[in-house]
Length: 334
Ligand code: NAD
Image (cartoon, rainbow, N blue to C red):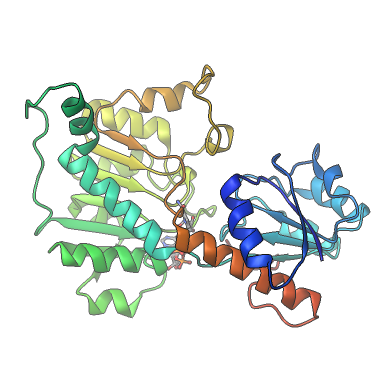
């Protein structure tokens, strides 16, 4: 099948081309993101392959459909950037990669926790400048601290397993209980109790209307003073302005994020020679107790391999008219 692959970087080309060698689909790689201006590039392609920042909205889908596209292949799990209803109305099938690196994301969350706690990001710079002072680098033992995990699906569970290994107590909140988390000794509580009793709060739920700005001014009122807040899920789980106020007052003691509400303007690009216009983001970068990574939690060799393999398995299912377990339809919530 002819597949227009949008938002491609060198690493996408490498892993997708390797996984495509047995199937020999005709892949054409485009660097730009898919949106209504770039949809024309996919004219005559029955399939487009997209990532998290491509805008697969109704006008884009209409343009794609009018030029022969029948399949949207997401090489990611989240599909908040796709208008599923419009796709269904236009007869376009949408498939995704539901799980590709739960260990990678959970391990990255642990990396943020350890770095923030022991100030490794600050120590790295100090030592390179010949500054071996320990002032300001004081950390705390994770042993017997309480971590509150919001969203105990694949990634939240793995984080629970890892943090259990550190000797942490586990509190959890989810709309469904995960017996595996309970078997670890994790205790499900309502959000206010989790906020009030956790030394570290880590977010692992999807972005939905219910979870949008889950961490807002009201939630920050309820949290333990000096809490460490970790977000590797989606930026809009956090009201960034409210979190900045929490950091300024000291109510939030540490912030580690791999995602940011307005990240599509910034992440995945080299903007080192540009003047960044997002003042909220720039304010975040001024805090010594804030660590930001640019949506790299998923970025492991295993994940890219799994994404590529699942992407071609999904295409094969659709191409051969087989039911595809990874198809997503309008009624499924993200
Ligand atoms: P998952 O579907 O296995 O788990 C999500 C959990 O959230 C489920 O248990 C679900 O019941 C729970 N949930 C749903 N609504 C909730 C609510 N209102 N309150 C509390 N919990 C709720 O998903 P996963 O694979 O563990 O991924 C979790 C999130 O991680 C994804 O939604 C995605 O946003 C994010 N993610 C980030 C990266 C990255 O690179 N930073 C990579 C992959 C996934």
